[in-house]
Image 1 (cartoon, helix red, strand yellow):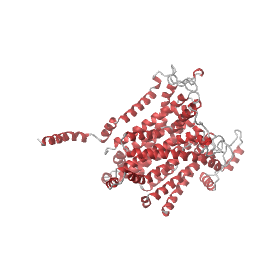
Image 2 (tube, helix red, strand yellow):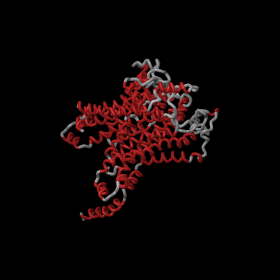
Image 3 (tube, rainbow over the protein chains, first blue to last red):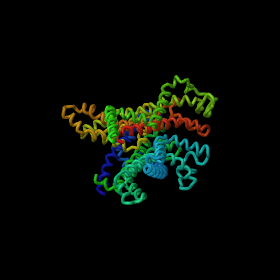
Image 4 (spheres, rainbow over the protein chains, first blue to last red):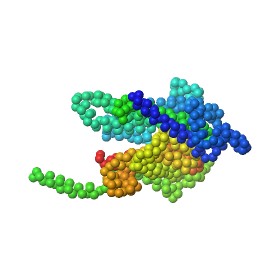
Length: 317
Length: 300
């Protein structure tokens, strides 16, 4: 097991470096001079050259990348152009809110998905299966930002039950686990949960159906095992794959929250990314994407290791 | 007496046999999907949306750009404006139908482009193997390290707003996914006997890829690509929704959803209409792709 973990970690290193390279190059595919956002419109040539040297933009690209990577390794992602504060601190504060949202959505989406998937897979080709499958397809096909708007229209505008936007009465800084704050989480969490719900339902349904059609299930039933016991075997066999899919979905929720956070003005990393894009705050843009992508890479690593831990067949491969 | 039904069935089987054999694989798939009610209903809805988007200027609709301050945000069912008017008093029905033109192009074109590029890359990587395979597939892995929404937004955010940039960003998102599928099916076919036979009879790598491999892998890659259209539609409209796609006053579903967001307290259900269009197209493509997949799985 330890050897497997070590091997997986070694595989991750080149990926991390390439991810950093992509994030670094993002700033350089932007049309125009990266200094435009910082320079006053009437800046003199000397000032421009001075700033260019200060930011290191006058050096060759590979050198710039090396220096940037070295600083990033020390936790220095530069300062936001808009606020002047360190990028890493800004990103980490926002990521906390996104994690809250993603975990709430995961609890809803994964529970629903596993239940619906098991039921649909067990009662295959019946109306229950069709209902659950339609629900799942609707979940993966719905533009989630639109679903968020619909929920706001129904529960905030028409019924006036839940708040439409924001993350609590005290703003983003003062989150607490009480109803006054939690009610702000309900609609964004439900909206975020529909895609993972749909995907987990489809995965678990397919797995359950496949496992139930295998010979060993027939043997279990023949030796007199009750259906609840058969079900335990189904869950055991479906767990590794289902877990991998759920891990990936959690990563997508963390990294892909920008649309939902924009709809609900949820002060997370997606919201930060949105303002970074529109203020042309390139260090912030670069830093947010880097942190989110690294989260995703490490989550994938964790999922691989967890999968190997519960499924002994993987380690041999 | 007892032999009669037996010979009758075998006669029938003999008569039926040449017919089923004569029909090719794709003809069988076509017949199967034509019999699938869900797929056909989805195809009908999609054709309706496509045709009305193409024929929009000849349908006798209101001008989708002409607003009026005195008829802003009319409700659904107002005479003369069956689907109401938007925040600038423009006819919603006209804007939804015209909106299909940009929305469908920006949603579908990236998948078509990625299908072409990804299939070529995957085919070459899978067939040639070795160092070239490593180079292509490791590059693909890097893009897999980003959640697709984040990658699309990062690229179009860096390139700046615009239709062309959205298409480029989405194509970059889908190329790695299609390449991976194409590579894996190609590796599966590469070592089969008929490929070996073609090589032994002197066929060059290009001929083998084009004649012997492409025909055997294209179906699987195509089905996978059709399943991406739904995601692409949602992402393309999402980019516009964020303000990264097309610019006002152009009718486009994602952008319409964005500008109408300010009106949800005044006229909520009109504000929700453009999203319903995105949803309809997305779910129809998803169901059609599922139908195609099961129609192509002849063994079942």
